[in-house]
Amino acid sequence: MLPRREAVVSLAREMARMNAENLDRERQRLQTSQDVLHRFLLQMMTVALILGTSVALLTTYRVLVLERRHDAQRKQIEETQNNLRRLSHRLVQAQELERTSLSRELHDEVGQMMTALGMELRNLETLRDSNPAAFEKRMEEIKRLNADAMRAIRDLAMGLRPSMLDDLGLEAALEWQGREFSRHTGVPAIVQVNSALDELSESQRTCIYRVVQEALTNCARHANARNVRVSVCNEKSGIVVVVRDDGVGFSPSLRGGLGLLGIQERVEALDGKLHISSSVGKGTTVKVEIPAAVAA
Figure (tube, rainbow, N blue to C red):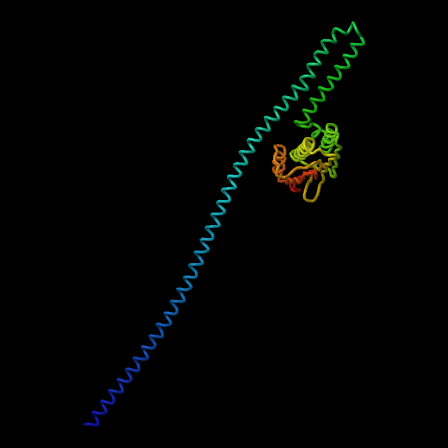
């Protein structure tokens, strides 16, 4: 009986040992699985944190960019509105100045000439039979007054809308401007047109004419120049107009009169560009470019 009992005890001990070993192996396997799961969760949390931080940073950056863009657009809109208000005010001023100038010219020149012409006609009646020599002298004076009145009216009409521009074309109108500038100022003005301008539209021809007119007007008023050159040529980029003088020039910070503003508005309406370069003592250059797509 004793050996059998020892065998049973030995078997029980062996089974207990095997169970303990199995339990240790299961515990180690479970611990290994938990460690793998823990590392996986840590990795996923790290990736999620990095992705979340990146998305948050990108979203914040995008929001800041949109806010800056919105602020820039708002400022641009406000600036455009302010410019429009200033432009409207200045255009009204320009209109009033033009009306005042036209009224003054009509009153001071044409009105006085017509008054003198009427007086000469009344005096002519008394001299017709009594003094033939005085009659002829009065008649010549009347002819002169009539010619002066016609010239003043023609100059006013040419200033408002030059019929020469419609009848003879842009080149002839620009040459007339150069001659009139030289006649009034005594400064030689060379007008050079290097290409045919017949294909230009009415708005383009008017724009070029007004640009040259305003540039010559500013030159007569402020430049104190000895020579003026006007050139119009057709380049690959389009029509290029250049008015250059060798006068006293001006500081770029002083730019911005009504005339230059009008030039800029006309040029921009044709998708063109206006460049004005000047410095004190070195003359002034006004350059206008009208794109080929517009000038075609």
